Length: 444
Image 1 (cartoon, rainbow, N blue to C red):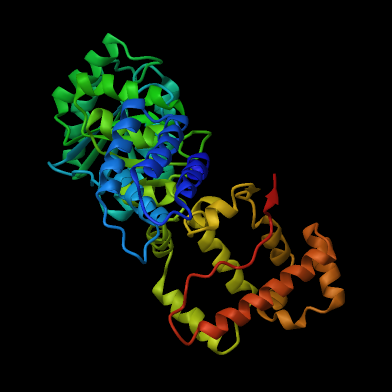
Image 2 (cartoon, rainbow, N blue to C red):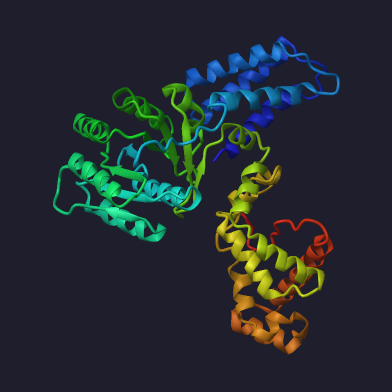
């Protein structure tokens, strides 16, 4: 999302390269480029100007240590100010009341219904909440059907009232239903429009007044750029929501909405969403996002993703197998499955400092492991259990069965052997989260 902004900010910092100290002259030139980079990324002009004024004040007032170069100091100041601009620290969702009611609002097409499903999945699996999804969009039958499908996917009940066109009544009845079933969380998905209109505002305001939610979240499509910020302002003026959710961050967006929205509406950005998978939802951490914007990666989020898939008992078993040199293709396949559960491969890799920039012009498909899996699945159980028995004739058979070439099979066997040696060498310490070698990246 922030690739172009990252590149332009890096170029602006290079103005200070070779300078012995920060001066008003070189700072002014650098800040001019930073402001231009932010505006090109669709950041609100007033926000960009206020931001660079703050950076200038901090930069000229900074005591630069002799061990710290001016460019490095400017990078740190910009990073810290970006984090402050986007909220400073993460703001958790409030879950107050019995049940806790969460009202979802936004324009049609912003991703409200999908977000409702993702939030239900997150609260159920990670917070242990009993969740009820409420189909409050009475105008679009497709929205009700979509919510039912999502509810089934994440294992959450969906409350609907076929034929009832009164969203206020539906929401009130849903809260009563949840209370009778001892469900402590209600997520109300509401109707959207193609544009902000008075009827929609009156309706959503009436629903809010009836169910008194502990959280009202405004969902906005990040791909709409400054329009997202303007719409958020209009909604907030009428609805006084508690937080913002940015969806479609994996799309073709310049990222300006993520940077501007907190400053414009003075409400925290609580969640960011990318992709259609139900686990593709993250709590928004301003400081981590600032690191990613400046190409520093996001190791903390990467570790958290890994820990979600981390099974200590399985890790202990794997460690024993490694020490005894028993690591095989069944183990290799299991490691691939864990990595796939973590989300989009390129997004995961971009969290590693320096890797995001290296992958800028490389397309990594979500099907990156498909060929590897096909080859392994073409092996017999005995071959997967004991890779050492795979001779030349077996390699030819595996290649034919997987629709690949002999070179592909040979390459995977070598990757497997290299991975096995590396994992065995570190098995004596803490077993790290390994990423088996894979092919699939291609330059655009």
